[in-house]
Image 1 (cartoon, one colour):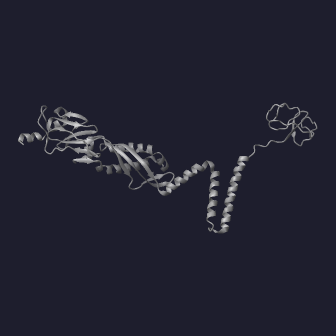
Image 2 (cartoon, helix red, strand yellow; image 1 turned 135 degrees about the horizontal axis):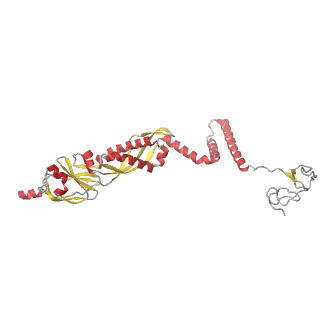
Image 3 (cartoon, one colour; image 1 turned 135 degrees about the vertical axis):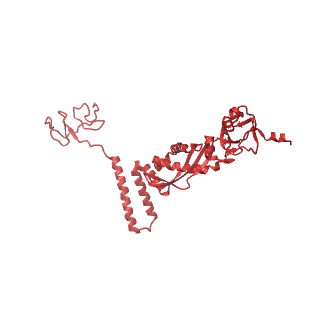
Length: 354
């Protein structure tokens, strides 16, 4: 190969990159002593950004599309190299392709429990796990703050750092919102959004964006879980406490029947009688409530002369003095109330008397 052919082979006419992996964030195009020609084609695909770096400084940034490299679209690089406007010679630069797609299904979890102050249970420790997704939002900031001078940068290089940011953000959000453990477990969707919005400021400082954050599960200590179960049971039974008492009483009798040797026969009989009395009292109270009569109606006797009401055992009318005999008086066909001889309507229910 002649010198001219070798020199020509070292000139890059087309620059592009396809990502064969699923986790590459930044890829440095291999130059290996080669130079870029003015007029070369730069292909930047969707979900990519290409960055030119010259003399250790970030120069021009190219978004998706096919770009012809000329002095006009390399203004920063031209100023760094002090090119005249008509410059056409090859030049040397580092080219980085930054992947701007979402990196999804990144797992997170609490290595150590998070301490929270709960209004119902006091200070408790909780654990959680879930997933998150992120992407490069500002490629220039990401290269300046995180990437450095590496030739390849993958998600494994930064995920551990992002996880620590997530756990710290969760702890701060819980402390600031003063949310209770029960509310937290019941409102995970709202909590996810609060954490995501809070952490995006920190992610943005390194050129990233937290696109999704999911808390899949929050676990509490065993004692707290039992307390939650008890509170839930009481909430279900609070509207029918009488039934609950009967059920627990019957359950207790069954347990004592199984444990024949515990506490001696006398203790068993005494406890059984106490439980029986409790059940009897509960049933009696329930029956009284159901069968409580309405306000009793006083028995009356109507005067056959003037129709005035008199006591059932009255012998003379309190209005006209007429003697009240023991004759059977007519009754209302509707309510059964006793009527006077001249009554046309029942004084109790108003039914018309035929």
